[in-house]
Length: 238
Image 1 (cartoon, one colour):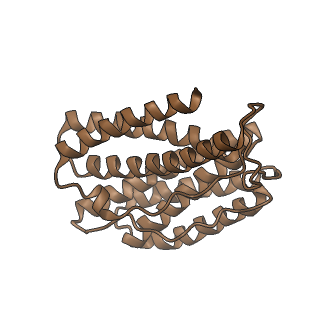
Image 2 (cartoon, helix red, strand yellow):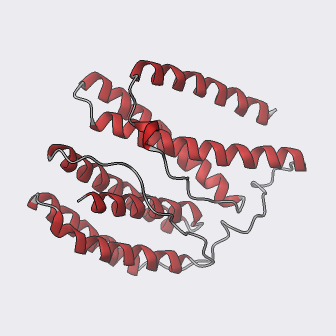
């Protein structure tokens, strides 16, 4: 079942990247909603692992996403869903297995109806809307987007892991707020990266980052990082 978690992780992340790279409003909306569904699948499978006392991590394989047509990545998403469905036999929770199977059937059908479009998320144009930036500012913005998008992905996974392993209702509400905030930031940065032609998949997270031993120190360090990031945003805007 650990392999099922890994493959669901990869499917969710690739779907999220597909949503970023799409410029067609309806395609983007649908892919974004599908990514949310697949994220729920990920958390459900993770919970099942915890209930069964199975140790796991967030390691995954690399996810190639560089395409020129949306149909190429859509076909890969369908392939991943087909592979994932075969793994569901290892999921002992029958109700959960049925729910995921039902969702996958719908997702595959809807993806099969999705109109194709040309993708510009990897053309390295390094322009954002009609804003004129010199080379130094463009370089600073590019670096900022890579660093911050990776950081937000890391925070999503870290807070999710902490929430999954916590029985404290108050803390879990805080973790959910932090997860939602990081999702918002990841989507914002991902959209900007796609428009600038520099979209990239976040790096794999080392388990030492989310298997936290000192929660208080981790949260305090996180607050300091957020303050520093806001200052960096202000500097870039100036």
